[in-house]
Length: 83
Image (cartoon, rainbow, N blue to C red):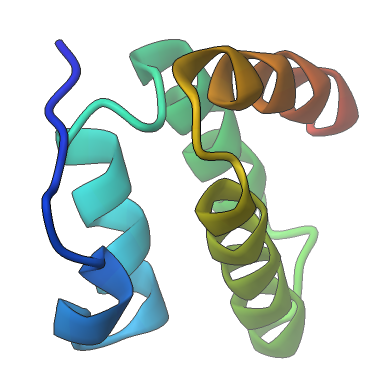
């Protein structure tokens, strides 16, 4: 399921994690990529600062990926990195 947003989600985000979750809910992040990302974040290998930086970088990367094929390419790359 992919839902397009006519307005920038960045403007409505309460926090970086809220924005990331909104991206997942609207289909910008696949369930497989979301599960992999959350598993990596919950693994205990990251400090709070590293988790915040990861969330910020994922949001930035996705904001630069305008098309679905761009997001799919990013997700495939991300899933390999967070293995």
